[in-house]
Image 1 (cartoon, protein in one colour):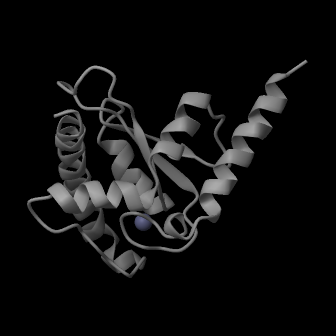
Image 2 (image 1 turned 30 degrees about the horizontal axis):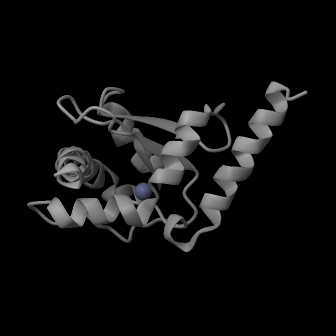
Amino acid sequence: MVTNDDKDNEYMKRLKVLMKKTENQSCIDCGCPRPTWATIIQPPNGSPEGSHPIGAFCCINCSGSHRRLGVHLTFVRSITLDTWKEKDVIAMENGGNVKVNEIFESYASSSKPTSTSCSTQNQQQQKCKNQQGTQIMIQDYCMFEKSMRN
Ligand SMILES: [Zn+2]
């Protein structure tokens, strides 16, 4: 018999496999090492039927700016603290930092916000950049989904 605990363990195992990939070992927004949060980008309004959410790994600082965008755009989960649903694990498996970055870089009209620093000095500025970046990313994701279907 499969219990909820077994399921939780299975999801955690799958997430840990993803976290071990080189691409997912730095925050998608700022590049900080070993991100332990996930941002699960929802298909925007007007996306084609059957569009799937895709996830990327981010650090705790950047997770805050993703959270503020609202759950209709993306929602944020802690890898270690939150209970996961299978559909969210699948979103992470479908996504990953390289794929989400590729979508961003192929379609973004402005360059992706980057920073190599996690210092508090840069934090406020970085947050603004991230927020703007994520909004662009989500619009681009919509275009990407459409282009895949044409
Ligand atoms: Zn970050």
